[in-house]
Length: 251
Image (cartoon, rainbow, N blue to C red):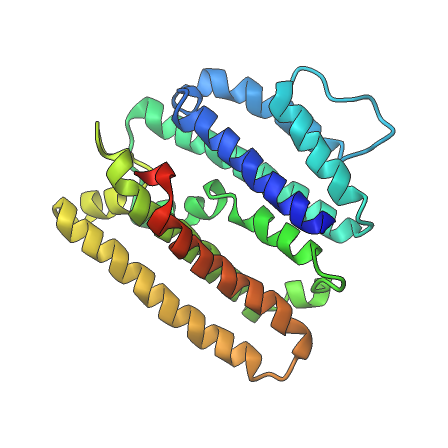
């Protein structure tokens, strides 16, 4: 139950951080965002140390992030703590990439966008805390298996691309957001909005087919210890789709 609370609190924190960047204008000004990111990176460097001085200057977001790190540390799995801290750090630095693009009115190429979207989506740390909720989370050896790493990347891509397709309507009401799969496809392919939406949906469907093939190959390996982690990744993809269908956030 503690693991579930920790995961839901992380998701809430990610939504607040995203809204600060997307809705409150912080993410359009690297000069404003950089000091905020720097303060949060200082929080991460503490790795949730319960005995050190509390973080200062990072505001409520920093206090909440320190609490997430502290509670993750309390689980007694240092490898997953370091993985979580590293993944949140990548998320924060990727937000600076977005802010620089917005300041320069730059639309990235598709390949660059796909790579960076894996970090701006905050899915990696979410999967890590999902694994932490298990009594026996996947060990370091499994996490380093190239087949498992490839499946994780596919799961992250699918969650992020699904979000892009569903959120595109809201994001494009004033002007198309540069950080959306539909927008980058439209620019690179020189196609219209409808064509780009179809291409984004096709990319998702192709990714889903590749994911299912990779999942089946891992299941066929006979490693029963992988089944819980594989099930949660499949659930993340499906839940993202189901939630996006009804979420007022994208209305």
